[in-house]
Length: 334
Image (cartoon, rainbow, N blue to C red; front, side, top):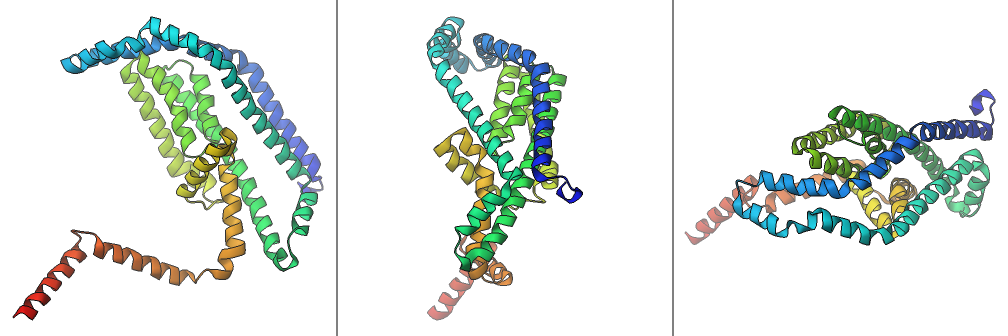
């Protein structure tokens, strides 16, 4: 928009206003229903848990020992015990509520900081570059350019994935007749903000609710989320995310687990941006000056794989080398 004569601050404020208006409208229209679905989900929790227990007992009638074990140890799932556990859980709700709103406040703070950085980036860039020694300022400028570009691409791609996955999951659950489909669809969309782990965790509540009503429906819900994940991993992520970001899944998982352990939900949300920054700084300040040529790296990797193939027991190469060694020993004996 700057190329069209619109100032960056005005364009960012306009985008933020549109985004906040959309969120506010969604909350206004869907908020009461979401609240009702959340209350219903909590109220019917003990009843659904008892139903799961009864379904398991029915399914294990052909296995008397298993059914007997569940009957003896299934008191945990009866209504009285579940009500007692729910009563004991009530004092903790305040702490969990505070944690939730703390995570929400952290997300809002990050949103405000991001808006400020995008609207007025020049003071931050000047301050960062002034702290870099002149000898490294060229690399720092290039690294900062890459970081800003990739963070913008990541933010837009993540937002788009959240909307697509949320809509697909919510519509699919509604078609299957799963209760609280709107709530679970929003949870699935929000789960996309946490790479790798988020989509798995977001599938647990609808699966548990569906299994309580009908084990077959639980299988259908599981199949739905598997299909959604396959579409995401093989179609959406390569099309939306991988074109702009070149991050290995293992490195993303490492940052999710590490930052999640240190900072909780906020750390998991910051995993991908942190991975982007660390990767670019590593490449610009270390790898460019010390890394060997790509052909040399390729040859070294092939050599490692060939060595592993020789060492692995039972492999064709290992058997051939062992036979050759035995033949050489026999020749020496003769």
